[in-house]
Image (cartoon, rainbow, N blue to C red; front, side, top):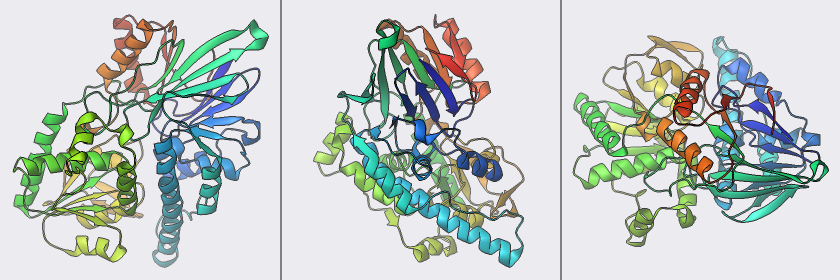
Length: 470
């Protein structure tokens, strides 16, 4: 029984972990890698997995760095079942379709720029099509939280709420090896782990009986501000930019982060702390995802359920405008009026946010507000690093807009959350192995040291291609 770490090993994208037993091969997540364009294309085209040898896939949640390579896996020959939660299945229906459409549109845009303007970029071909997405959805089996199912010979899974995004799951994977005197192991894979006491969703659930923990480590080297403090900071950013007559541009993941931002802005409005400026949610995907949120109240915390029952949805208020039309999107940039623009993608690598950044980033009256982790070599990371010039659509542009970083809105567990979660698992099981995935090397070193301080011995960081016997 072993686990091979194919992706998200000392990186935060491209989640792929392969569980091998004497009877089956089960893949945990199948996400797209994000980073330098050439490297991303190469790594995504070459998944590092033989799809014909897989018996099943277990999917933790719908974020593209965890689910986005599933159509490619199917395109390359995988024909087995994909197990996930009902909300994740619904989200993948729109998110994977959107990913395919973005690839198609970006390839068309970039190839036109190369042909017309001689832009310094390589030609691009989409990784997969909408037809490949449909084939993924045909293979998805939706399993509710806390219901155990057999996914392959000798392998069962039970999903618990991870509290990260709608439908996100901590996967408790029970493996029995009949050829090793009935050896049994419970492997707990967090996917991306959420935070306690965040708005909208329930807190992460603790799993009993863990022997091995595979846990994300994105923010293993830092602590988040409380959400109340982040709302305070957001109010200051909105007023400051409004007084300059500028726009607040917020790159946001369409899933969860956009909804949390709307929740926070709505709270500021309720407290009379929101400037008189429209809030544009410029993402057809976010509109669809927000509709899916309304279909899954089983994922909400009690406060959010109560507000919705009272007819006070956190996603709908006077100032918010949901934008789907391209011409309306262009009109936002053409307008000189102050505004808030929330648009995907979260790491600024694709989608409408790139067009808004091109239109606003060189004007010092505007603000780029970063509310989530930015992977190395992405446009978002270069903005976080406040580089004087950044390349957008192959053209170098001056970064004159104010840059504000607000990681407290992150739906990822911070260092304290991660240590507490592992400690609680150890108290409720025979946990003897902790493996850190989905994190950069610096963060993982700090987290390992902190775990050791708290009596969690044996924690290690997975490296790409490493095989761990469990």
